[in-house]
Image 1: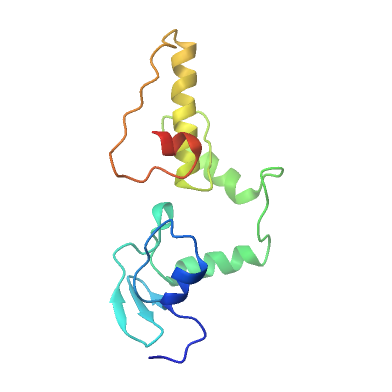
Image 2: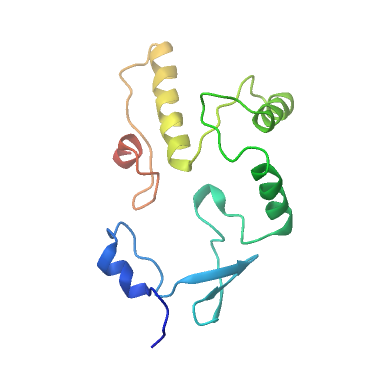
Length: 149
């Protein structure tokens, strides 16, 4: 038994179980390795979740996040910002796309892709085709559209 302020069992008491987390609580990470409250080391095969599978505490990512945090912490889409415009320019100059659409999550990206496919279908005169191809038992997001896919 440990003397930590919280334990994995507290999840079952306080959290809505939309997923089943591991039976330990990670408290620090380096690259693909994480350590729990008792300093036991594990290999983290996910390194994050969904679109953020970056590993843990990589110095380049830490420096970039720290530098940006000293300028602007977060801006909503009521503003634009220099880094997003630089990335948009690079993407449009180096890919097939004329414009880009940035999302804050994979669920939002999937939702946008499904809506765009529907719009293209309507604009092309194939409005009657509304089927969606999706994997069974796969995670596509928690939006209404992606959950129903």
